[in-house]
Length: 359
Ligand SMILES: Cc1cc2nc3c(=O)[nH]c(=O)nc-3n(C[C@H](O)[C@H](O)[C@H](O)COP(=O)(O)OP(=O)(O)OC[C@H]3O[C@@H](n4cnc5c(N)ncnc54)[C@H](O)[C@@H]3O)c2cc1C
Image: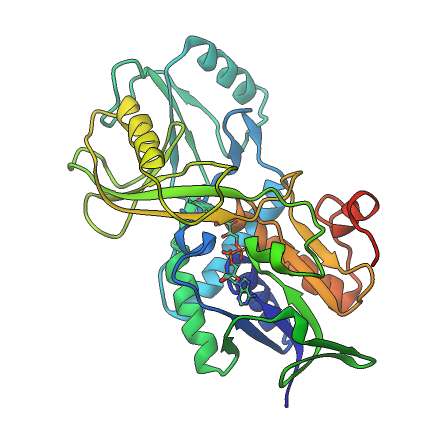
């Protein structure tokens, strides 16, 4: 029989960050993951943007989330001997409407976006933009994490330590007793589920109201006029891979037909948006699609099961797993071990009255 304090189910961005925070706190854990070749985390752009661009507002909790995200990814890069975090990598937002210029000027003058945006450039931005772009803002302190690289390296790290069981978790094999939980040959104080969109197959937590979102992302080759020193953001995100003139172009949002199959329609949509804004041509090298675990109110879903005190949920990272998961993983570990509080907007309890029915 293997014994652990924390059995974690699912090793995507959520599970990875939980493991990292548990390890930092010196708490034992074991992970079960089926090690897919495709998942939301494996295909994610990994971009973090402190500004909600459409509404010209600071992103939710950004000042709290950012320090922990940067710290965690620096630590992970060091531990895994990789370079995955690209911090202080600017996002360029081109502007092609006079009204937008006025709106940006106003929020900047009021200091509402400081320190992430502090000026607007009222000249045509450097780069291959179509002629109607005559201004731009540059977002600071943004960046991206090559999350696939981190996850694959972390899988190996856990395997080498004997902390990863590669299998499909079967919820019907859980047995509850006074001292904790048994699952096959594992005895644990608690199970923390971070199964992403597969929460729908978890009989303990499938009542939590998710509204999963399919997303598609492309790997594209361009000519050399597209400089790899920034993230281009114009109803699409375009950012460099580690290969010369090869970029990622994403992402779509779909709520019907939730499968992981890339479609020609989504590829056309992404290319049309990019080619409308930029003068470059793209050759598609690869198309990928996966499902984001998004909750109806677009906040995470974290906490303890209302009837089983040994079962926890760490899910609902939605469209922003990279930014959100490190902060809330730390919060959950603090909640479990030090009676810390969970953010009311993220806590599972908010759904109890309306969505949970006791058997
Ligand atoms: C196209 C696209 C682009 C994106 N771009 C960005 C971006 O730029 N920035 C950003 O922050 N976010 C981005 N996201 C969102 C991000 O991917 C998610 O927030 C994040 O991946 C969610 O991570 P997760 O760990 O909750 O879920 P997942 O990545 O789905 O991981 C869950 C893991 O649990 C495993 N699992 C589930 N059930 C079981 C079981 N029964 N037994 C064993 N294993 C199981 C799964 O196989 C998987 O390995 C993007 C998403 C998509 C689809």
